[in-house]
Amino acid sequence: MDFITAIKTCGQKYTDFTGRATRREFWFFTLFVQLLFLCSAVLDPYVAGVDPENYFEIYGPVTLIIQIVTLLPSLSVMARRLHDSGTNGWWMLLALTGLGLIPLVYWLCRPSDKESNDFGESPVSNFGDGATEPASALVRFIFVPLGFLLIVLSVASLSFQDQFTDGEGMGVRVYSGDELLENHLSSLRSAQLVKRTDEIQYFYSDELGTVDKSGQFVTDDRVVSFVTNDDGDLVVFEMLLEEIDRVEVVRAADEWSDGEYKILGNEDAENEFLTVFLPSYDGGEGKFLGVLGVEIN
Image 1 (tube, helix red, strand yellow):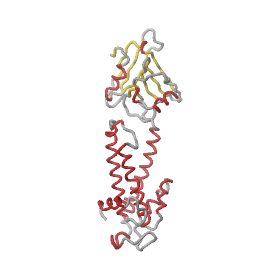
Image 2: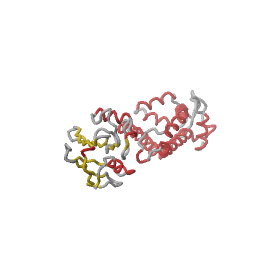
Image 3: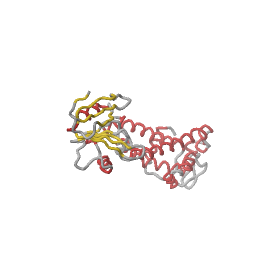
Image 4: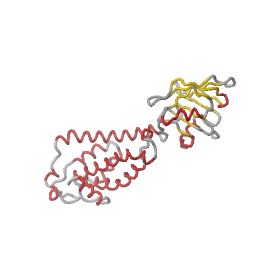
């Protein structure tokens, strides 16, 4: 069975959880699905209308569609592959345990039963003796361990990314107030950084995994800079817009690092100055500082 035939067969048998499937059928279709996911990872940010550098969604629109379309055929061919090696298809549920991937991958790599079993006839008549012969040493000792390692790393990376973003993941750019999600605002309110009556005009945080540990934002009446110190305490500096005298550029932003800007207060200001750090992407620093309405030098 070649690559194209395996795809066609799995497509036609997408709801068939009976019978048997050879190693070639299962692994060719698995390769096909992984190639689709690779393409979807490239297409997702463009479909979502977000710059790829600032796209952190695990399940984008294209990925979600591919996952839905390929779910049933993937499960059915896995059940048939387990049947082919003499194992009940229900054992695929071991994948839900994490560690169950170890015996599952072993069964999926086993050769076909030489004789008929409880799930169907031997594939020898259709595919020859090769279907029932053990995999070569190269496959068993190199490709299978590497494949298993990739599976483990993929699962671990998804888990880490989900934990990292925690539904709040943001790219390295300045966000306008209407781009902030409700969970972003909820986190800022929980940290007592903003009030429900505040209208955030622009926001930026250099902490990609959260919005309430470090950052700066400007509302309709004040600018705020906050950071979490070594003791885990949140330190907040703020200044009313009417108290701002001017902004000094300490270090201009570039494509590699944030710019540093000192906002100096006038004689009525409670604080002499506060410092904000802003990225250059998409003119973010200009947008943020522009609403302060003062001279920048």
